[in-house]
Length: 237
Ligand SMILES: [Zn+2]
Image (cartoon, rainbow, N blue to C red; front, side):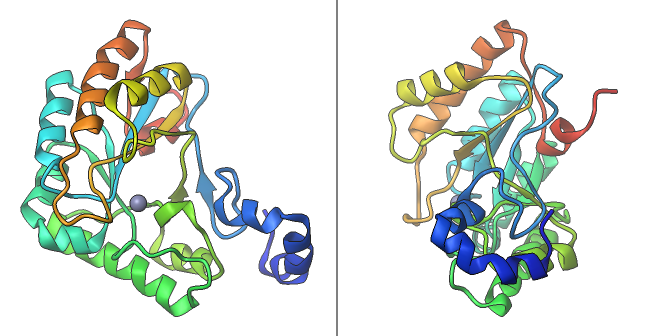
């Protein structure tokens, strides 16, 4: 893994080669902090992750997951946890994993180290205060990593989590989302969906809910199980 000196000395080269874009947004990049984008590839397990919540639509999603007896991972924004603390607590009480998705969901590129640390720390503090759990996982808003993120993650004990499949569920209808998820399903895949919309105050996420409800039984028929991100990262035991 590259160290700070390597980053500093090579930034010009990275930019020139177009590699900076990969360092910032590439799913496999760990330049700006420890990060994973898939789990154990030997087990037929998939991790569903839901970003940007909690929202008013999250309880409906929890009900669908409960009906299928499927655990998932929710990357929550501190500000939304503060707004809907009961829903955040309900997610934890239902046995799902909660990760940190920053406080207010900014793009980190060109943000100062102080702002980046504050975003992670406030997200962490609000999730701890309102949902009663301390996240170990962090997903960068828009998948954008930047200078200062690595030390912020290290100080707060957070592992970065990208994704192998992006569901595009904020813009696609349910059948298209479902089709993509079924086509991309593979051992250890981390799937990114959304139970919140950062651009709207009161989202109703019908396409996401319908796609999840459709896809889970079909993937079970194909032999897949569902795990939280922490579970899917662990070796089989
Ligand atoms: Zn997000």
